[in-house]
Image (cartoon, rainbow, N blue to C red; front, side, top):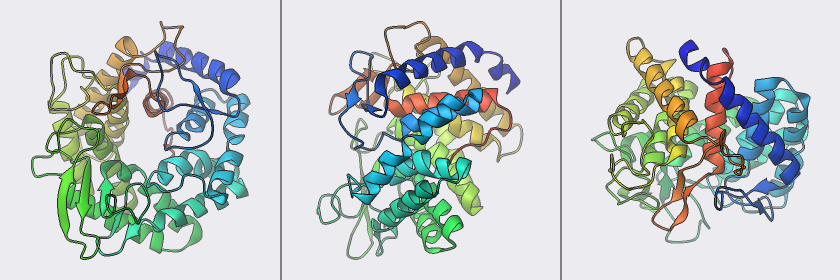
Length: 377
């Protein structure tokens, strides 16, 4: 870990410089999901699944510096997330975990903001409405009455269950954690394939709960391995193991990690789908940043020499992101990382920066420069 930390000082300084400029530029607004020609534009409202990554970065900047400017800037966004859940704005998504863990759970944990706590618990209640009882899964996105979306879940949801575990611990109601545990078990059994790859999405029969089929929305093909999804698997299964103590979830994280690492190009930054290991296809720097955090977290739960292997692999990927994908020498960009991919099949955010990539890159820098730092999940 020390070897990684020694190479990150310049990267942290550059990232904070960009965040300072973005505080001035965006004020109480939010950057868009992805950059356009390497620059974020402001979005018109707090909608979509990515807005919380901006206050999440502000909390990380506070962790990295202790500067109260960042705390105040992060706390100022709580009101928007309170209004969003109170007014029922764009809540038809499993990504309520992303949205309210980074914006409101963190504000409650840090400063006991009662409105942040109330909003996060309300978001957890909305997430519970997406549980399909017959299958025990959290349905991914869209209107629950939409037949195209009924019975579908998504690998990203492994990162959204922490909101439910927090809700049980905070409220004393075990229903939230029970739903998260059952959901994660279903993903372990069905979204993780026997060859250690992951489906992007998977369907269950909404009436009987019978597992049906896997599909992709953003990968190369239904049976390929979307890189960001595999990275979510590394980090997400590890986090769910932390909450449950279930050793099979740790095994699932290891399987995801080993496959991911075995299918990287020479510089360690994944192509947008792991079916590609060379050639002209775009890289996904955001998948790499997520994987760094997942590998470092996983390393804390496995013995050496496997732990050493994961830490060394994370360090190699992070160094590559700093050297070849970060914007420390790109003053014209207001992102932290470039060369990410949002949705290649739909030609959305291809070879651009994106908010989640920036967040997880900064989280990785916090991990390696602040010994004992505690993740927000």
